[in-house]
Image (spheres, rainbow, N blue to C red):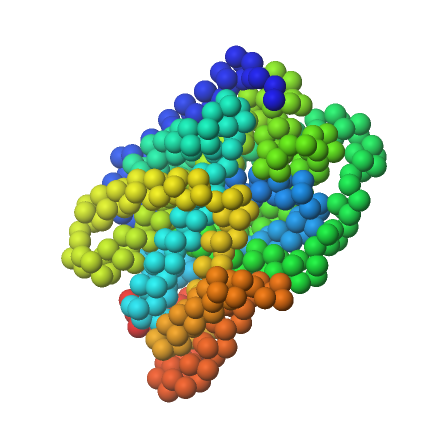
Length: 486
């Protein structure tokens, strides 16, 4: 591993200083609405940059490079399912979320359609999923620090989380959005530069492809069709409208800004995944003996000239921290709204709610660091979190938001059944036949929802009332839903 020049360290230090300066500008925003949804005033362009920075994190970027290093472009083809999902959500779901007045969380929307028990379950799942995905980002931070300094991953985790906590705790969503935009610009420019240098070092595109291991550029590589379908569906549904992304829809200034931001982020992500996957492919050719999770950091530190390494490493930190801060904020907001205010302290005022959100940010940061140190790899941490979300919340949420379905029985039963089926299939049966537990959970979730909905006479009456009251352009309000509206 090449050592960094003093100029590289100067560039990295400037980056961290600017990040803190930008983030702390929002400390004087002192309402829970500002902390959670940035005052609902962000434009479509900012939704795009902030959303892209949120999901193109350490797990997506370093994990894509790592998995491509091991398995080839098959992982790129699988992860593009996330891009497809983002486009579909942008077209059909995200603009509708903006109509839920006063909503801060996915739990707010689930409460509107399925009642307080569904809100509680969704809040708990949101916290668990966000902590898991945050753990993947923290693991990526530790990996990068370990490769740069030769320190333990624990030291890297502690340093990285300290910086994120410093501005995410006090500035909330305003800090996160501002730093996300800056981070997006940094990594959106410099990571493609890494690929150009890497391909040139490998002798150009033709020489690179001639030395790629057999099967690394095929559709399935060494994967079975069933394995590919499992990973594809995991990326298609695993992060669909998790709390940080839903918050961008709630924070948009209008439905059009939400639609534009999601659509553009989905399209952009395809090109970005190709860049990071291709860097992993170069690492496999040039440094075949390294650990897969070291693919992207090794290429950055070994192949780039002085000062350029510092710029790109700053971009790499931007990638990781932009997701970490989003998930920290999302977890705090979910706990405050879906658990604390709804069930523990209903009369909590805005000032107390803000204090609770800040305290939870710190607690979750520490918990995510512990989780990261126990996860075997970045991608493993992500897929574990996906198994909690897709089989429980996604289908009932979309059915409620897009078609206005409302049934306390159906929503709660589907969450419990889908999560239970996933857990049994994964941890008791250990995924027999190679069939993903996520897919099994999603199928059970949808089937139980449909059966419970058909057997709930009150649900049909509510849907009929909603359809008769739908002339306005705001579908959620026309259907009589909103936070607590059931």
